[in-house]
Length: 111
Image (tube, rainbow, N blue to C red; front, side):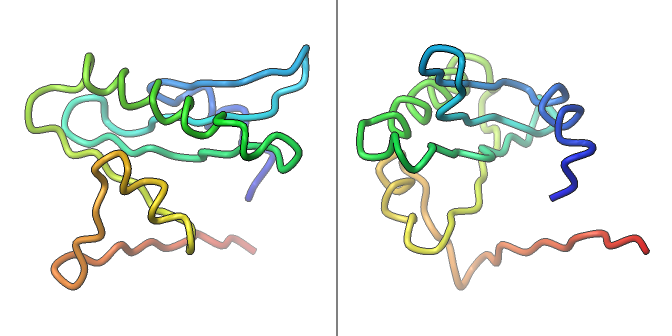
């Protein structure tokens, strides 16, 4: 992760949710994409000390609600689930379409 550009990345998100305990951010999630056809749920993160309290569920509920209100008909909503977290997203109707679809990515490495 290039932390030097993280703030710009967050600012350019379509929609962000943060959860705070006093002034400390303990959870977040965001939506990125083109705002018309493609939307991706990204960076669902809850601080380890705050997990198992429903924070991740609430973040997902709010992101899905935003998409249901703001995304147009037939919009593509994607995400990449961390290994072992697939069942969390399946509760929100996300499915692994393998072998028919393959999630792929690359990372630009500059020297």
